[in-house]
Length: 235
Length: 258
Image (tube, rainbow over all chains, first blue to last red; front, side, top):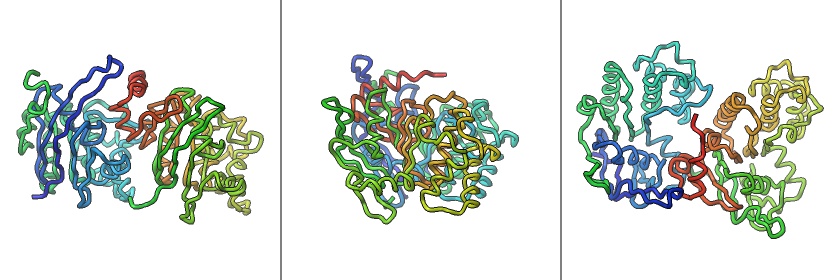
């Protein structure tokens, strides 16, 4: 089976210059891989570095050492050492990310927020809007909200917009940071189904799910992040 | 991905006497890429912008630009006429104060049309039509086309300045604090507009701002300047989420949360 994501010996610490250059180790020697069609769930208590790992993989955090290798159009790209331009290209075509919170842009309508990743990959506006509508409908977001910017939506509504935006493309690797945290049972079930569909299409997924039921339903394998924590099992 | 950089900057320095304006700046900019230059007042960001746009001559270093015929030309070895032609056609410059970029005593339509005439368009009907199109793209009502910008609000003036700059389909736009001095609701509207235009037109842009939220929203890549030096650069998300340098950490931690 293909392995679209390989993480090799990644270590990360923060140096807090404004706190007397305090060194805050986050994770060390992180090594794992995600196969296509597989959903790997990061496990362990809060503060152990799960979100940090996702942020490193997406390029939002730099890493101190190690490699983050992605299969990008058939060639291996190391996110940890790539030029920002290549990182952006990988994000556009290969690597998707559903963050915990939606970063809203003033005045941009929900439908456009969701359709944007497709449009930036060259899909026509019409088709992108159609697929965005399908997803929003599937996630039970009331239709009269679609033309409004999501800034004023409830947490659960924003999260569904975020999920629709993350799932609309056919990225081959998808990072999920608690996508179901503020959803009700019905919508959680929809997301579980959507993750299942991604797996069938051969997408490699790496996620954080605190909800046990969801985790049971989607995880092929749980990766305990405590083994990478410099603080060990203490937390 | 295989395309070539639009702009190549090599060891650019500018000294004012013995004082440093900016020192040893090097980077490349690709088509469609938005680069934010951030830093506090006096950090050298405007000096750098002015050097890049040839409004100021640097003390040392070179800037080469890929012309439409795919040849690279050293900006400081062009003659004045060539540079001005570039400024009027392939480039835009959006000033913080719209009055610096507009002609305040001619109509809004003429402000936009003037750039078209500079590139040789002489058909009055077509110029007026294009100007009207651009006014609506920047959300200025068409019936204001014959009004002078001095009768416009600050936000409208800034939008007019943007239309004037973009009408010739430039490939590179320099912006100096494009949202500075505007109140926040006007800022949000302008940012959304700029973001849309940059995406639609595939523009490359260099935006000087001290507002990190503006940089986050508009830019792909970011350079942080302090005392004339680029102290940190990288993907905008990375610089803001995981700032490495002491000064960048200070900047990021100073953002007010609403």
